[in-house]
Length: 313
Image (cartoon, rainbow, N blue to C red):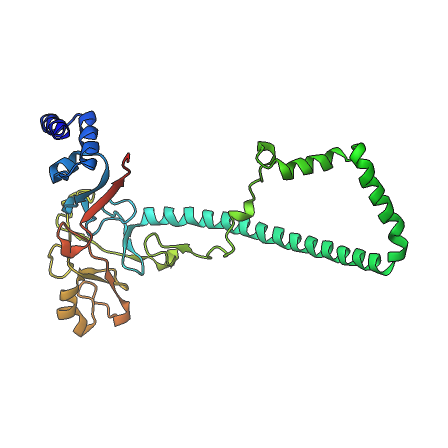
């Protein structure tokens, strides 16, 4: 009964002052051992566990926005995967990745050379060891005197410490491995992957090889051409039907860069295979489907974000 009274008292304090972190933690710990689970409202006020949030349309990337800067693309280009980027952003990304790949290749080449030298050294050491073992086996009768002297040195060492400082340090290193000065040193070879770095820069999203000449220039028409392209309310429109492109499937003709809705292309442009804006002929393989944008509806893509925070229990 005492526990139930304390529980009810803390719950009422929590409802009166949801901003008090101390009260929230107290109720949280009381509920862990009690019989009544926390309500949804109480769990939403706590700072522990998995929290979810619904993403609305404003939180989604709109059609015509750069996938890197998440702003309307001033000079839009498309990759072979259909993602739209601003030319300045994607070129800066490719340049930075090229420098990183160059450094990784230098490290990889240096590691390969180091491993090669290490293998040669081990091979030479094993060769000398085999020769020494062969000499000891072939001239075993002549080595008895040395063996006898080694036994005498061991007996002598029991009374007099004849080992060198380096030998004693190695012995201490083997037996007192917990000392800081005897900890193993970090080897850079463990950081170097055995697989060689790629020759081409990876795409930011698909990770496929991407080159500058693979970028496809786009002609994105806006609802209000006089307004600034930075205005998020200035939507992109189809070059044929002049309808706003939001979450509908759309395509681009690589040869001309004209962007249009996919259903308009299937009904009007595809039978003639002529660009309705420039009048140039194109082949079906010159048509690329662009990645469509998402909205706050579940059918358009991922609309729920989750974040986990560790509990104190």
